[in-house]
Image 1 (cartoon, rainbow, N blue to C red):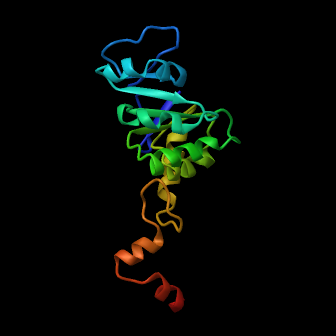
Image 2: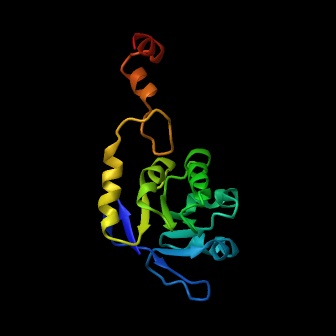
Image 3: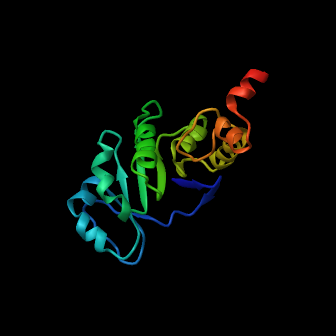
Length: 174
């Protein structure tokens, strides 16, 4: 899998550790949700960055008490039609204030890149190098949004208020 961050392909510094393998020292690791929760205290004492792969059929609130110790949360899209990870991403960013890396993992399509970013994802596992260009184009295509979202881009109304223009006055002038 290729990793896309900031619209380009980058090397993934995290090592995925299977449940039955020892956790290597000195490198950032990603472990399964079950493994992390079974030994959260040991992972909290670990000196290197830790990430967790969180399935979309598991309650994200279970992860909330551990978010301050996690560098990365990878949310899984088992197929492109299953959007539960979008909701998990919004909850992580907006309700639980997670500021670490939020990664989209699994079956994601080019058409979903902008929606993933708006939901709070900032890195994406993709299967083709050409998807990096498509991702950058998707992010650059739209610069103004009407709806607030988890990506912290200000919505039109907030931008107008910041400039001293009342949204109601602007709408009446139209």
